[in-house]
Length: 249
Figure 1 (tube, rainbow, N blue to C red):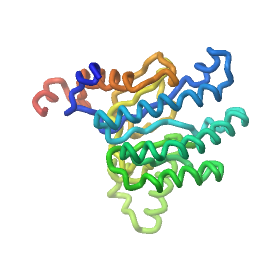
Figure 2: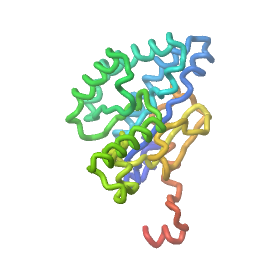
Figure 3: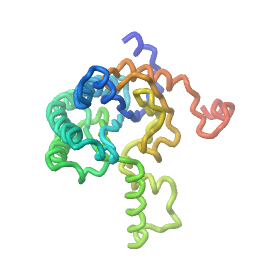
Figure 4: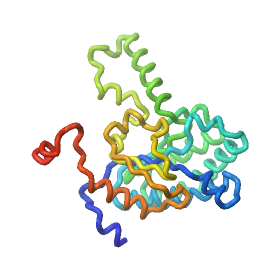
């Protein structure tokens, strides 16, 4: 709480995106199977989500499973999907208690039927919550999302519902899976890797990026607060000079 007291509550990112990286390496370091790391990552998810809601974040998007992750060994993928089902089932009560709405983005039709069914149940059970959105990026990749948006726009142009001369950034954003969310102001990635791995490429255009060595299962709410404090120390210029930012602030 001492660290939290340092936060400028008037400058909390509305939307934080997180690449939860390092579960497999964490497990390997303990001589365990990769799925052991995924199971132990749930405490990090819970603590981070509850901390984000408490400090005033309005949306948090977790990169839970990419389209590329389908290439992993089948035994790991199946275990991940089973873990996802059981986790959603167990966490709905906590989400409702904290007034957090569960949503998801990605190629959800590609999920196993049991996983998709449990996800839909969780989304339905929390749909009236208003304090914060918890967005799971599942079977997601930004290139997939951008291609889907482009195809949808092309169809609307072809049908006459969209005038090609009116298309701008706002139009394009309205076709993305995150159309009901503000763009993330802060992106966090654990494990020491310094790349964004096909995650929210359009939406992260002006986000502040925060990388840390800690592996995801060890990440906690205090680490989130440290990232937000770092964010608050930065000057966000959006292409302007420091002098212009000061004049317009």
